[in-house]
Length: 372
Image (cartoon, rainbow, N blue to C red):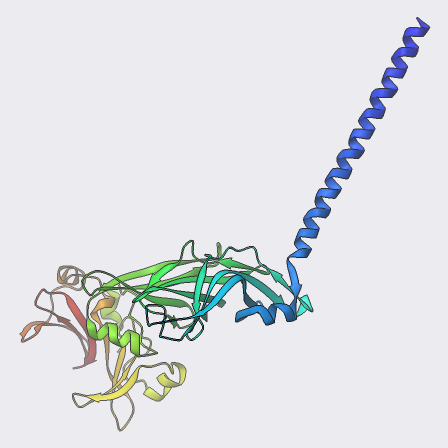
């Protein structure tokens, strides 16, 4: 019996020793694994001077009070010159093609920049003679765009920002745009243009969802007007009106106070006050003996001597309503006048008139508020 107890005791000691050894080996393995991961992370940093010398583009951003520099560094890229003109550029333009990575630096990083995990759409091609990056302010957030030429009027565009100290994508895929021209509207929205069939284009207006750090469309409108497209492409401060106006009974209530829904200032405001606060107007001109202060989504007509607004005009594209809904909401108009280029519908609003211009198909083309 004593021998059996002795054997059992030895076996118990052996099993305990094996368990202790196994736990020690497991802890050692975990420690080594963690050390290896730390080393890999450490190896992703590079000397700042090396990064600067090997980068092709630098993007500057200010996020939450921190100044960042994003470097686009080539990895095995090739450099050449175009033999003849094509969709990428002109003859003799310098082209680089290959794989690229982002490196991020801020002052707290000292003399090191850190390689980012966000994947670029490699391989990428850049023409060093063209603008390949740009930055914008959207919803109080700095964001950057990187452009890739795919063909005539086809620019594949990728958007990025910095979130929690890392570079992140703002769209799941690149956007096929007609132009590198991207409009930043009131520092709250972006507007892009993309080509459609039969000379039509899409104007997409984007907002930034900070919850998931993604750009999402808030409005898409298809347009065929050559004048509108040319204005958008060639006039820096012009953007396509996208803030829809809903016609309600309050439209008449506001009109009685000299205010047109969709505009910021009432009749009687001095244009100097308007331009002081909103300096980004498209132009100031005289048309049909009236002085106009024109913004993309509203035009103020004013008296040249006094500078006071006498009438307010907004484009009909902001109102996606039919004449039937107009009469249903505002009632029967005071006048329905047939004109050479359509119809004019007038509603009385105390000492003012609310005028809706319609085309031959009874589609609203403009809304104007003026004195009787």
